Length: 431
Image (cartoon, rainbow, N blue to C red; front, side, top):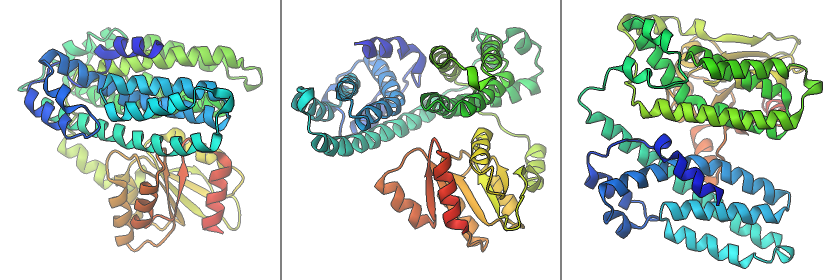
């Protein structure tokens, strides 16, 4: 199966650590995950444990794509791909020895071997239960791996010289890196870390836009990636991105098949680059005191106007999202509403603005990296703001819905966003 080869080829690219220092601690943490085969994990050698942790990382990162493809096929009642994707998911679970989940998945694959006689309603009951179960499982795995990585890195005495590490990544401009001053290098490390942390958002956005053939969004996501590649000095990939943007600027003549081939190749290359950057274990960039002070003083000025109000009944909407490409998507969806749109790329900037301003509605992304979005809502309420707050999220479950409401959120918008959904939600809460 293609997926097995894909996993093996990515072991060296996706692993959280090249060396596991505290083996017993790692085994103890993994044993706490009830779905995993504890007995097997405890018998692993150091080398086997390293490969296993890397396999966990790969499967956790690929599950969202598997889930999306399976649900797309199921909604289209195209059962052959549904069974194929269930087989891929089962193979992934075998890789990480999630034995109970494997048995449950294989049971339903066997029950639905006769594709022509599949009962859609029965299959739906299984998928509606199994997919959220896997999502919780893989979220737990992801959180566990992040915790273990942080603990492993905390044990490192002093990382190798950053400049030498960076020069090993062939996609980055070695000449530019060699010429950087120590201060510039420190800032560059921060940019690389930001690229690694945000790449998957750009990847998912671009893939979704290509899938629904929304070429305006495709170009917006490619432009967002172009900006990221410019900042990290990724010369060859940047040239490829710019060439594709130029080639497809005429939306009416886009060849979808050619665009799809490029996007698959391009995102695979970017994924490898992001994994290589992750493998370097770069230090976290620490802002200088004077710079941090300046940021705090200028928070309000960081709020940008995305579009001006153009109607008598115009309302002010503040969008809080780390990706400006998302703000442009909302702007496109509300282009005829006449509302004034403002944008803040962090929760801290939003709070600085809200201390003295009173917008009519807030749209906050749940994936903010600088603050916990739920605590952000509480702080906003403590400021005395009673305005409607809408969350944007790519993970919608019953549990998250309850959590939204408890936090004082009025509504949510699913990502990737659909213009009609945005328009409907805004109209509902602004009248």
